[in-house]
Image 1: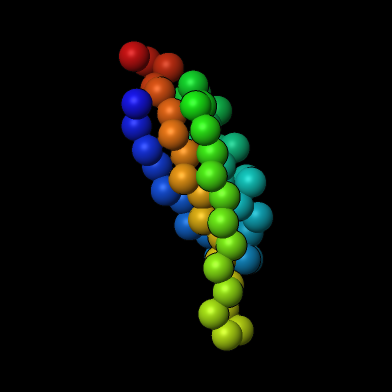
Image 2: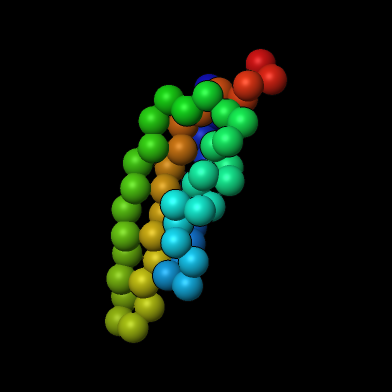
Length: 54
């Protein structure tokens, strides 16, 4: 089992980054959160997965 954290500023939807990453993985779980600080905000996702190569 492996873990990947994906951060994405709001200029690109995070779902595109997640989809690109998980396309060849066996996903166990995805946890999503959004953080805002003043004018800045970003999304992050914790992806728990197994490589399809394993």
